[in-house]
Image (tube, rainbow, N blue to C red; front, side, top):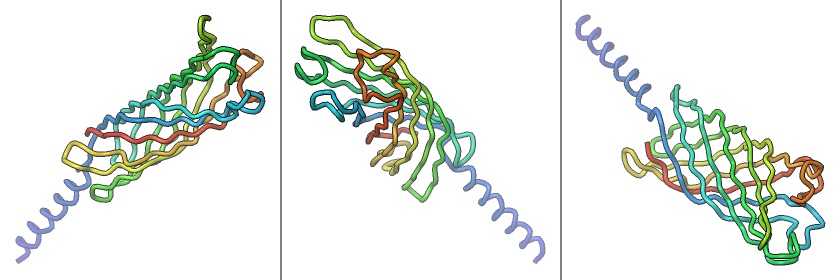
Length: 195
């Protein structure tokens, strides 16, 4: 009887340990990214600008719930003449951010939160002219929900982030931002996840 109990306990503990180790060490996600950018007052109707784009992020989980994320975002928009400059202007942002991500696991549903830090490059190219650009510190705080569809495939149902940038008009006044040193932006993303 003792041997049977001991063998049973060994199997139970091994099973618990195996379940505790049953998580994806890494994941790659890509999809659509919507950016709501705080350009501020006095920009002729472009006080707050919204642009579509895409994102790619990868996370390595060194613990079941804790990982390190690297994320790239790209957004682009064309402004009509008289909106931010006298001529039609292409505007684009590129962001590269890194930081911790905490992810819970409830079966196929995996909510997460993160804090990401890095930089964003903003470029404006008025039609027929050269590009004006600036690079500034940026950070994102937010989270979302991934839902597993198959063993190595899931869907990022939604992600919402507060996205702060620090473009300073004193550094590059031609970029015509909100007149302050900090822009309070936000993003919404959705896409696919591969484990």
